[in-house]
Structure formats: structure tokens, C-alpha cells
Image (tube, rainbow over all chains, first blue to last red; front, top):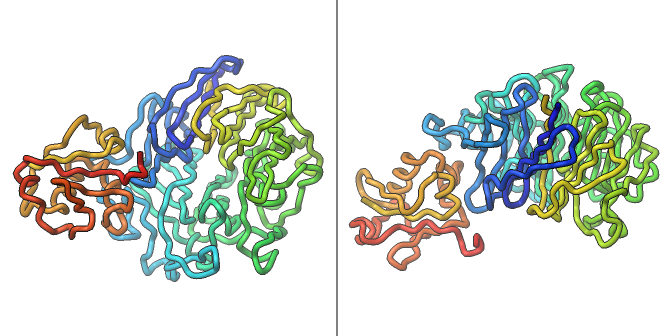
Length: 392
Length: 98
């Protein structure tokens, strides 16, 4: 029988939740990396036992952990043979050092601060790790301040794909409330040279040459809070998702507005429809129905909890526009948690399972595509990310 | 031998229990101790000194002999009781790290 492994990153460590394919009894393993922030952990599609985790601390910096046994044991990538992290920028090192080499040919010195003044690029943490679809040793990291790094040796060494930050618009990027973070990385399953990333608050970008050059794909987005509401960059994109069978169709949860693109990001149209609020963070696509998508509407500005104290997932079976509230098993009064951008995922079983974690420490699961929900663990530290692996 | 006490999270990361005993090449300065520490435990590279600037991470402190050495030059000599191994060098997370 198939089984499911749910990887949960929290403010105070990582947890691995496992169940058989019935998804009714769950084992909780953890905390791993207790006391550290784990913004994200994710498994390789090519080798499900290969996991990567981002472990960080405001005191001690950034660690990348790797597991080769599905999360039972972990090792810090590198070890005795790791290149010195104090190597010159641009060289492959174990640290996340921005590329300031002349070859990039760009003035990478500053981005915009919240008030529009220049601010130096400063690495803070890894927000998202995206393993290659084909090679367990190849993994991408999206970091704050926004940049994309690549490791081809299982996380031992990292090199910036500096063409992204070197885009003409780079010096004009500015942070969102969570910082200037590259939080979403989508790999095109049909075209290994195509990737999508999203940056708060710059927008979405696409490469068609394996990450060497990038261009903004934000046509159709409109945002308050920037001088030109439909500018090429400056949009606070919270999340992008795709169905692997249709990589040209993208769904986006923006700061405000749920958006859809049918042309790989060349243009976007709003599909917020009848949502009670079109603000939110998390977004995902049903594993077997490419037109079925899920969001968790959140009240803003600044409140960042569900409207009316009711935790509701909204499902659209029409690719957006028409939405239904999914409430069975979710708290419908006095609920003031948030669901963060990387904290929703689906499994590949039939029926499709949907999972999300909250800042209140609950991980909710639905084994029937969202019709009913229940907490599979409910008292973890604040949940930052949820990823799901469907195992044979 | 110079005795070094690490904060709990770094002891976990380096998989050490109590104090770390280090032999330091050359003049026993703070920089020399940190170099020796990172050679012995490469996993600690970047956790005490920022990898880009090599400066002390802002939320870490260095104490010894009831003195705060955090703002001493890295190449300043360590106090004699630390060099002699009678007192440890304490690497401490700032109080907010409780």
C-alpha cells in the first residue's frame, strides 16, 4: 500500500509525519533541529529518501541539512571536505555568498529599502529549497535578500545564478513585510531549461535558459503601494503553483488578488471571483484535476488571520472565478491563525489529499480533496512550511 | 590547551558535550582560537563569524574572566588565565537568545 510523508518546517524545528495510504493514523517524528527556524524542507522527486532542510537562526546563521533515509537521520552538508566559506564571492562555497564578480556585469550593490532608498544586499536565510526533478544532487535555494542559488553536489557547495539579481530591475526591487525574499521556485517538468520564481515584493520571473537570464512576467498584475500600479516589477507575489501536466498554466496568490496565466506568465488575469477576501498566502493545485485549485483567504491589511474567525479553505473546480468554502472539520469560530505561503501541499493518492499548516501549530489534512478535514497534529510550533511525499 | 564553552545550539551542531579543548598555533588570540575551532569543527564555519565579512555575528558575545571581549580586536592577546587553561573562553548567544 502507498504511504504518505508530510514534512513540516516550524519556528522551532522540523517534524516528519507519516501514515499509510488510508491517511487516518499518523506518526509524528521530531523535533529535528530543535530550537532553530526551519523555513522549508523538501524531498527529491528522483529519490524520495533524499531530503533537504533549511535550518536557520538569527544568532548562528544558515545551515543546510540533508537526509538520505527519509528524514530519520540528517547530516550538515559539507563536513571535512567542504570548501572554505570564506572563498571569494562568485566561487562555489558552502556559504550563500552573493556573486559580485565582474562577469555578471551589473551593479549589484544595492536594492531598494522600504522607503525607496538604496540598501545593500545582505544574505539572511534560505526560504525555499527545490530539488531537481531528475537529479537528487541538484537543488535550488531561494534566499533573502532575494537571490537564487544552485548546488550540483547535494548541497555541499552553492553558487548564485546571478543573472536573476543582475536583471536591470534588480536595484529597484524592494522588500515586502516578510523581507525581500525569493520564496517560490517552480521547475517546468516539460522543459528542463525553464524555471519560474517569485519574489516579494518584486514579482514573478522566468528563465528559459536554465537560469542564466531572466525576465519579469508580471503583465496583468496591478498593485497598490507602488507608484505605477501595473509596473514591470514591484508586485508582492505571495505564491505561484502549477499542475505538472500543464506547466504553461500558472496560478498566483498575490498580496491582493488571485491570478491565472495560460501562457507561462506572459499575461495574467484575475480569478478572485467570489472569494471573501482575495488576500492570502497559500495556494496549490489538485494532483489529478488541473482546474481544481485551493487557497486560504486571509484578512488584511496587517491582521493576517481568517475573516470572521472562521478557518476556511476555498476550492475552485473551474480554475478560479467560482469558489466554494470548505469548512467541515475546520474551526468556524474564534480562529485567528495564519497559513503561510509554503504551508500547503497535496499528495498524489486517489482521492487527492490536501494538507496545510497554521501559525497556531496545527497541520490539517483532508483525504477527500478538501471535503472534510481533521488535524493530524495540533500543537506544534508555528508552522512555516508543509510538503508532502507520496511513497510507493 | 585553551578551553572553549560553546552555546547549546552550537554544541548540538558540532556534536560535542562539554567544553572544547583546543591547541592554538602561534599567538593565542581570539582569531587564532576561532580558526582552530573551525578547523576542528568545520560545521561551525559561518555560525560564529559571518562568512561574508568574517566579523562576529551581531547576536554572539565573547566573555572570559568576567570580562566582555566582544569588542576587542580579534588579534588582541587573550587574557593570561585563558591562555593558561585556568579559565574558559565563553562564546555566548546574546541574552535575547534564551
